[in-house]
Image: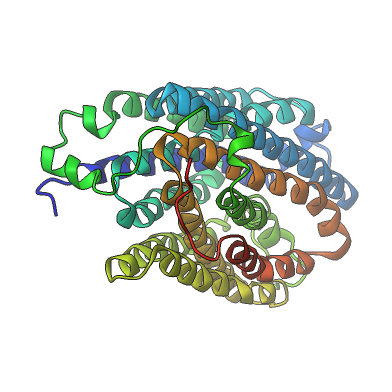
Length: 435
């Protein structure tokens, strides 16, 4: 091991950015429980008493806003993945952070569903830059045997962001109003932008990286450049790209469902005997996302550990992904139990499985592609996941109103196992592409 480990500071920086990224996107999930927010979006006076028909209409409109965000997120992956591979990680992610922070602040000034849709669309474009940049950074700063663990660590920021949102936003909304919640979180994005710009460089250019650590980082001898021009159509010719697409297309919509609709599940599920509101909803979310953070770190560590023990890349990644998929299977019971604590634990285990899955699926890009194509490949995967999320978001509202949450949790239960089967059929052996 090298005497210095500066690369882990880069992981912390990515963790911090990812945390703010998820705070910004999840404020809306808690704001939707606020009566003042609901009334303003529906265009009724604050003195008006909302009926069940009003609430159902609100959820359907909210579903379309969420669809717009995910479609923008998909478009953002296509555009920003390409941009990052050309501008470089530092400039590309700086642009993305600035855009999503500006959109977050703008949300504080909307007064209708139309304005909310526009602000969320802009937010989706900007937030799409986080993961392509982060995965490319990991490829630049880590050898293959450490990438899944490093990815798991920074990916844990997703849950820390949700935990902070659950702990602070309900309180802030009740005390200062929903507009202040969006304003505060948007400003935090500009703060983290300054940290990123001042601290990030490639390892070969960074003054704090020792020669020995640089050799350790570069030990895989992965080619830095590709012969010829990298295009979407060229990348889509490889089965490895389609494996990443499947892994994101099938799993990401389930994660989006958790992020967007779990507050409503705990607030209005017909099965639960105890329903939660802004005053007491924070605790189950803290439990869910603390446990799932452990899943992100553990399953990222496990995959890397198995490789250090001599397991092949193929065996280590797929075995870990199978364990992650099995963690999700029992979640269907969360829609049937009357006990809020049992539901919380089942969802927490499933969320831990998802983050472990995500950490390993994301490494497919850095494991199998040259570094100069990593952001673009990650963008393709993220695009497919966001499209899947948008399609599911468009129907969640009507499904929720008509049949409740059971069909949605059943869908979540077996999606990961089916996705892993398709990935294995596409790439029986994980091998780097020859470009």
